[in-house]
Length: 274
Image (cartoon, rainbow, N blue to C red):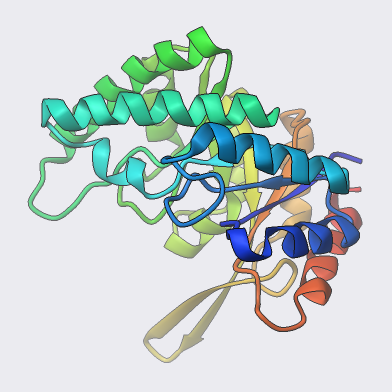
């Protein structure tokens, strides 16, 4: 059985309570978020990393990886030299945080394309910055996983494969979010997995429920097994590429019945992938 992790923004006031619930629900690790209002935070990253590592150790949890947080979104496509300097400092500090906590992967969303921008120009700007941060990742021995989101950037397996191949670094990989690709309507996750293959370093698990009423279509992110994703095909495609890393659930943790929610999603992973 591969290891299971839960991804979330950890808040200081209830971090021990949350981590205890995650462990008791059958998870092996946690993926915290590098966020100004959470732990670890960019402002106190060394101290926060040491604190969080100690708390996780008390509950027998590993740090599977860390989400880079929203600050990266704004810094990637920017032309401003000062902003570029901020990006490199933020990347270096985030990588140090991951290493202190004992993780090996940093998730980053590499910017976004917006209306009025040249897609080609945005692509080239982000590619240039990813190439530069790949040297930081290489020097510090950490993998950076670039994640697909609703950012209107890199919209097919072909684009992602070409982008990662152009970066040409063993430290830059693809962090594939199964639910996101289905939510945006970009095809079947199993096809993406087979197409991207060895470029995938980690996966995020979430489900997506699509309802059609007449000409209207609604899409909602839901917990595992309650949407339309074909999990048997996902499992087969992961076996085909010999995926052998963490299964990380990325869902909003409810305020009520939190432990039951965690247990259901933990059990689903065991039932499908165990």
